Image 1 (cartoon, rainbow, N blue to C red):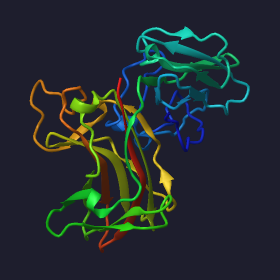
Image 2 (image 1 turned 180 degrees about the vertical axis):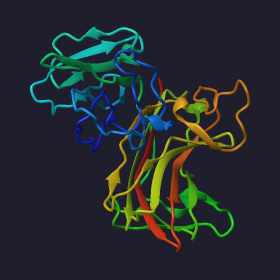
Image 3 (image 1 turned 30 degrees about the horizontal axis):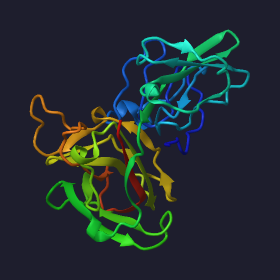
Length: 339
């Protein structure tokens, strides 16, 4: 079962806001369609959290959750609202209608013995304090009838990975060196990348594709959803340089990724686990254009094999001298869920 890690601290916000990376649900009054993990709308780095007049707000963690039939899931409301009361509600029609869950009046809601009819259900909490009341964005549940297929690597043997760099500018631009470090990871071995930036504002995108395993929908079954985790760290971070990371998916000569999230701390830091990813969460970043009428990427039971990996993007906003930035990855894992 996927759970949210490193939950962001509560903030004083003048309106309803999501404090999780990705997986945005609709606002309570309209429940607009979920935005994509490939969209910066879901990235809290791109959202202005500056309040004008603090008032009541609500949030639910996790925003997406995947579980196998028979499992137990818990959705949690922000519990820092002194004097607030809670009422959990459920929607089985993608947010068109909502119904109170009897007895679900705590700051969390647990559903035990999850079954296939629970697939796609949404849960949100209505928070009341005094005369003020607000409903949260919704958390979505994805259910699989069988165990997930895990493709993971924490050892990073050189032969198991292939890297392709795209520097800008292409001539005299930044370069990256890569090596496997056998210890000091989270734990054990980790993959070390060192980028030497050029003297101009520049950027470097490197596609790291795992060669040690693939998923073949035609043999193993169509993809219902994908979960992703990694931990990262940046050594001696610099104010003019940003390092971002994202899940990579390669299929039929095309490469896709999610919107990248920043890796900026000196200690090992898990990016928030991304759960219940669907094809619409991925955007194409390389390869031939997708033909009309073709699913790109294709999650169906007749799709071509998929390989996974990660994208690291480094950008230097300004500077007059070369800058070196070192960043690492460990505990890289993809879980493919079938219906």
